[in-house]
Structure formats: C-alpha cells, structure tokens
Image 1 (spheres, helix red, strand yellow):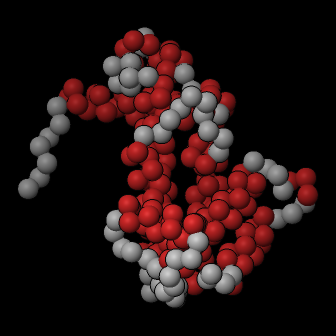
Image 2 (cartoon, rainbow, N blue to C red):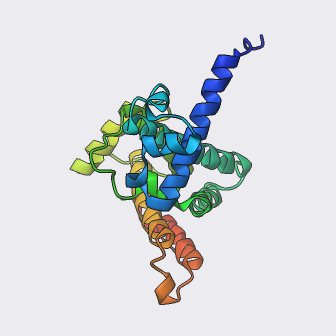
Length: 224
C-alpha cells in the first residue's frame, strides 16, 4: 500500500526544516558547533527568529537533529560498506568498514567533529542519539564478532561491556569482540581526529598508511 500523499503544508514544513539544517551545517563548517544560531539561520533564510522557532524549539533541538542526521548517515554508510563486502573474510570486512569510517570523516570533517569532537557547552544529548551511535558502531563490532573466541568476564570493564551489550539488544557478540571493538573504535577515532584537524600536516606524515597500520595492529592484538 502506497503512503498517503503529503499536503502542501507538510511539504513546506519539511523544506523549511531541511533548509534550516543546511544553513546550520554551513555555520558549523565556518564556526564550529558554538557558531550555530537559530536567529542567524532565520535571517539568512529571510524569515524571523520566532517563525523558525516553530520548527525547532531551540538551538539544542536543532543540534540534536544535526547529530541524529550525522549518526544516521554514518551508520548507513558503514552498513553499505559491510553489505558490499559481506562475502569477504571478517578480517577484510573489518578493513573495509574501517576505511569507510575514515572516508566518511574526511568527506565532512565538521560533521565528524560535531559527533566526535569537543562537547558543545551546556548541550546534553538525548538517548535517541546514543541509540544511533550504537547503530554506527555495529558494523565494526559485527566484523570482529565473527572472529572472536568466547571467554568469561574477568574485570570491571568486562562487566560494563556485558551490561552495555545487554542494554543494546540485538545480536549478542562474545565478550572478546566487545573488548576489541571498543579498542578499535577508540584507536581509529584517534587517528582520524588528528587527521581531520590537520595535526599531521606539519610532520610531513601521510595519515593513510598510518591509519592502515593501526587497522592491522587492531587485528593483530590479542583478544584478552
């Protein structure tokens, strides 16, 4: 059954919201998250601030939508990579997903920093953004879960990871996969963050082989 056609009012509302988010992303690229201003967005769009507040309750509501859009886009990008390479070995699938993460970050550096950079003062992300972050993390976890042995929990970190696994639902990867996936996410994120903010420029170091070496290091690490 086809969806009911949207009314002109609904289409206008969606167009206005999308235009506002596009202007907000331009502000983000120019000034970072602290530079996002609902009133400035409204002025750029040729409407009043109060008019735009009918679409976004406040700046934090707009930030939440931008963050949710970013996590959703990252999740879809990594899911597409994982699906495209689903017939490869888990090791090679992990390599491809890791490369996809880096490519996504370099395509939109400010979007990456909105999700993973310095927290915006005073902003508290709602639970829905954490659920989307879990979805973005899943392709890395799933590739490593296909390689991991089983092992009993033996530390406070292990117990925390198992509690997180139980809360997120879905497939229940073995504990070693959780350990390695969290370490992998942290290390790959670290290299990408330094590349995105240009820290390798003055060193004359090409970040790509450094990133690939970090990926191989993750795969070679022990599972404990």
